[in-house]
Image (cartoon, rainbow, N blue to C red; front, side, top):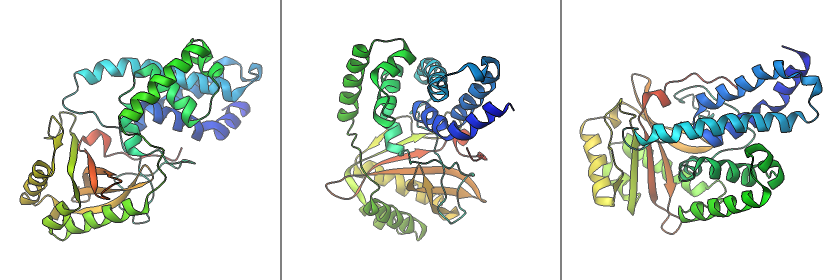
Length: 295
């Protein structure tokens, strides 16, 4: 690898991966985008690039935008809900379904789910402005829009995210405690105690990708979700192995069988009641069994 390309890779790879992952919601595609950008950098004459960070950011953004526009059509025919691919961290227990990717900041799972409400352009503008503080002129250059147009797109994106309940919440120790109680209750077979930790308006969303039997629509309400969990327990699914796992910087739950991941559940807490209000169950094996390299 050329010395200038190698230096750029070491300097910006984590930033570029975090941008790509926020935009795409998939680890594999984000890795591929970053790799493709650095491969193409060889042909771009690195010595002639005045602002390497801006060049790489624009390259990653353009590739992600193309993927998003194509993916939005694919998701229309996706069997059931599409959920982002979990990004595994280090909980210190060694129980992660895959390896880990180290980032300088955490990217909350519920945040990624809410980003799915945005159009590809809205998502790009929202992420670049809100998460990375890009100026409207810089964003406009990346997506071929005027600064005023970018402001309007951002306003629309913020409104959609607000309607979805998005807040810039800090890591919540109370949430970690509730999730750990939930995992412990399931591990002990105490299903009533686990259900007692759910809010009345709880919703569970499952993503099997058409490869694993999963609910094709969200299951809403304590009655239906409780019945769903009791049904899983009756099949002794929880008895095969449940454990806390670090996902997107937060405590989640992994379901395993013979030491292989069967699902990862991510959680969202109701701030008023302090109970679990959303469960995102990733069952699609393509989003679970991976060996991640450090980025």
